[in-house]
Image (tube, rainbow over all chains, first blue to last red; front, side, top):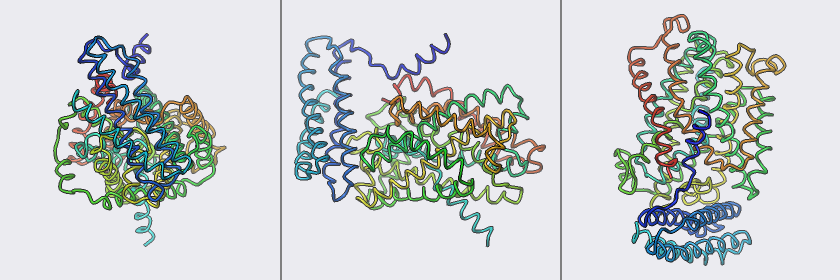
Length: 142
Length: 409
């Protein structure tokens, strides 16, 4: 019994709690935007490094890592039930930003794996634009 | 001249072998999140490990016995068993984190999934432990780990605002965007990373492996007073690199690839290649140390023959424990648990168990029947006692902080 209690306590940090109020939901939305912003900013920086400053496997692994992280953050956020109409609006505003960020990271990863460095540089611009949108969202609701 | 060379080599080995996956992760994550705002904790952690590693090295050099062996005799089997269980669990978790870290480094260099490399790196760790002589093993990987100096060179190339870094390092308290609980949780993680229990058990057992005597007390002091603080500077360089490149962009250091970004930005491809070799060597060295520590603690508790200074067949049970710890660690990593998360948990749980490791060392280092006239000075005892109180507070606060902050999320 004691072992179960300890296991419960240790695994507790990994759980996603439901949003009970609009402000709680906004808080989770900002956390998600910040997590995806971290991935997008990494993607942008890595894409700009290009083959002159980074070894091709590094580009590919870094972009895969952050694409997976962004996809996971997006999936967790979209699985949270919005508690009211105000939260629906927050969800409607953030959801396309998350989709766009994930798509831009996927484009960068595909370009890096194909060693298409022209496309990689172009994806860096798209990632920067996604980062700006996420930052605006964070500033508004944060 | 030979003695001088030996001391110099020992310092380099301690310097290059100081950083492991726990230090890499804790310092990069903290730098990315708090800038240099928690640099003071690294300093506290390094002073703590210097203080207690010196004691454990002194006990081993004078008594000719490793600390865990002496703890069992001096404090009894019950207390030693609690110490053994706690340190063994953390040790195996740390072996898993190191093996996962090694696989991640190879993935960065090859773009092949890290899970493919886990069994291979684990086999390499075991073969080195089985085949390579202790002194060769320790020095080759420790000194190659010195390539991590590339993190400091990259920092210099990034041309940061040094005044800002220093003023951030001098300030205590969370930035406006963070709360005290998260700040303290990361402080605890840094202490756990700097003072991981395996370090002292390995250090004292290593002293016996290398047949230290009273005449080697100078080597002991040189290693811990110079090698460890220099290693601590590497930790600070990793933190500062993250503070300069990651923190302003809102990038969290959740992946090894993100932790390598400051070096890629500062030094490009060559810097990255050097970083890979440095990280591999430093983490490999730590994987050897943690695996051996598992064998050392169990064998010393039960009074079995242990060590690499005898043939494996003469210390078969010791080698079996080492092998089992590697196998369990591989099993843990192959569950596909994120090795970085595993590292975070290993250092935080290390922090929770710190008093169990360091209290017995303080007791034994004051017992003339083991250290003769070389018991702790009043100053060492005073500082050691203050650290013990600090470690007790850290230990009590760790789990609540982990739950409250959702492991720093």
